Length: 177
Image (cartoon, rainbow, N blue to C red):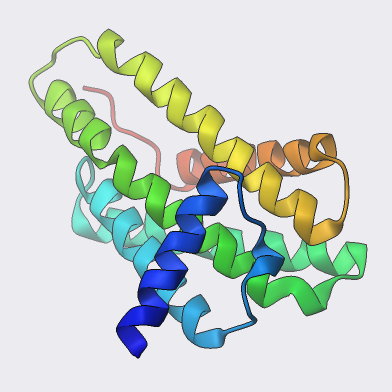
């Protein structure tokens, strides 16, 4: 029974990544939320540890996950839709986990290229495609969570992404070389 629910959640998150399903199509479930956040955090940690020490990777992961939670809560609170928090955060974490899994090969290639002082120009298109896809998925989720136009969701997803990158780069600056 539990395995079927996990499979259903994974299928739903994949469908949301393809913009075919909305967060409100899933039941409110703190179990699904915890599974999504756990998976998201684990994948995020694996990605961060590919190019950073474990303590730095843990810090980056914590900041990223905390930003997702706080940003979602604040946006939903301002809009008056806090009752949609669990579904929205579940969708963001679940789709983030799926997209994070897809990004792992690029993360590993980039880390290897950086260690070997090789050019990473071949990876730029892949990164750009994943970034656009990720922002589009977040926009889709915010659009449904707030009952707004896709453009508004896109602005929020872009703001979330810029805040995340800015916070990580400010709190965990990369050392040259």
